[in-house]
Length: 155
Image 1 (tube, rainbow, N blue to C red):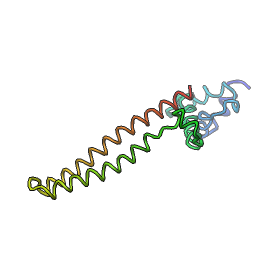
Image 2: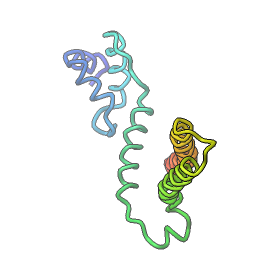
Image 3: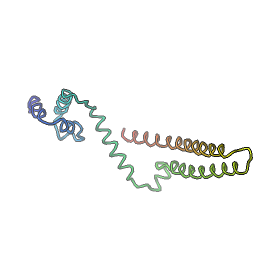
Image 4: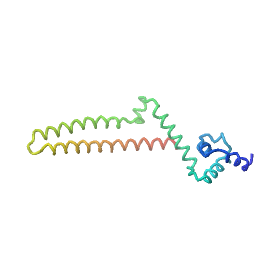
């Protein structure tokens, strides 16, 4: 089948169908000459076409993430530090810290003449807010690690 014949057949398809062909994860379904022609037709129709390798890696990345989430956690993964428990511990520490901050500030404001109720309320809100930001910052480090680990596995 010549490129002209392929182009004539592809021009009959809708833009959505062409994007489906472009985004296909299995290049064995179509001849390798098909993809540049699909791209040309889509560009002629005024459609932004993402690079194929990005589309395929995004699709594969989502599949890998789903597979990793469903992967059973075992004792060997725990002892080889493949399974990180720090994010879970940080969530527990956040809850304990929130209760502690609330308790301490309540005691300071009720037992002290120097602090008024407005100051106590402000300390309560900003103390818990600051503690939340600190804990979220720590969790972000672990999410960055997970992202880098998944990128490393793809390479």
